[in-house]
Structure formats: C-alpha cells, structure tokens
Amino acid sequence: RSRALEQEVTRLEGQAVQMNEYVLENQRLAALLDYKQVMAKNYNFLIASVVGRDPGNWFGTIILNRGSKDGVKENMIALTPKGLVGRIVSGSGSTCEVLLFTDPRSGVGSLIQDIRTPGIVEGTAGSSGMARMINISNDAPVEIGQAVVTSGIGSVFPKGIPVGLISGIRKESSGLFFSADISPFADLNRLEEVFIVTSVNPGAIYPQGGG
Image (cartoon, rainbow, N blue to C red; front, side, top):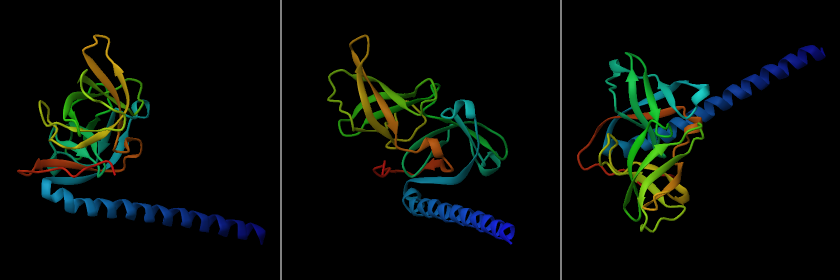
C-alpha cells in the first residue's frame, strides 16, 4: 500500500515539475511576443531556440535551430529583449552558430550611452560571462553604472542595441585610455530563445534596454 502511495507521489511530483516548465516556457514566450511588437518597428527577425552549447566554453558560442533554409546568413545579429547576444559566424541548412560578444574573438563598436563616448567591447578570456570596453578616452567622465550600447560604426552590429552596464573602470598602461568591465544586459548564462535580426528597417531606433 505504502509503495503504491510513494509511486503516486513521485508521479504527481513529476507532473508538477512538467507543468511548471510549461508555465515558465509560456512566460518566456509571452515576453517574446510582447517584445515582437516593439521589434517589428525596427527589425525583420526570426525567433530561434538554443539547441547546443559548449560546456568548456559556455560564454563562447551557441547553436541555434535556424539556418540557411530560414534565410539566416553570416554576420546577422542575435539578441534578446534585454540586449545583445552576438553574431552569426557559421551555419548549415537547419542550424547556425553564434559567437557571443563575451568571447575574446568578438569585437563590438560601442558607445557609453549618456556621454556618447566611443570604445570597443570585447570578450574576456576565461569564460567569465563578462566583457570589457577598451579605448575609452581618458578625459571621458566614465562612471560605474553607465549603460553601453552599440555604436553602429565600423562593425556589423546595428546602432543602439543595449550591450551592458559598466561595473568597473581602470586606466590602461599607456595612460591614454580607460578600459571598463561590462556586465551584459542579456542573461547569457541562461539563453533559451533569441531573436535573429535578418534586416534593419530604415530609421530604426532600438528601445532603451536592460530592463
């Protein structure tokens, strides 16, 4: 009798976990659908799911379930409602690989949003999930907590996409520039669905991000 009850409890617990997963998925998809209304004014895009990730380089690349048969091409941008994820670097008919902007091989032309000071955001070694902004003019009024967005200059990334918040500042050895630690807006540690931007609409203005 007790064995049957234990099995029933286990079955019900499993059902509860499964139901909770459905609820969480619906919440994520609802947020994506809300965001689609904003996105549609600025971009043409596809929604893709993360189907692969390298455990040894968690903040390096991800694999998405969209490929050339969906119109995905190299250098298209991936993002979430919170901010930048990275860019497409390779693909097949049904999947593509995204280089996250936290990978040391990545470089993103960016601006400190409120003071309009430019720099380059690049990934950091060691799979930390952080990035850094380099080549910031040493006379710029840089402060912790300032937002960084893409500049749209000299790179494939459209202008105005939220990148992250400045969480630390240091002077570079040359003394001519600052560099800053960047905490990404997008939750790169727990990516499940992302947008792939297939084209940018004329006059697109990305909404203020990070929320």
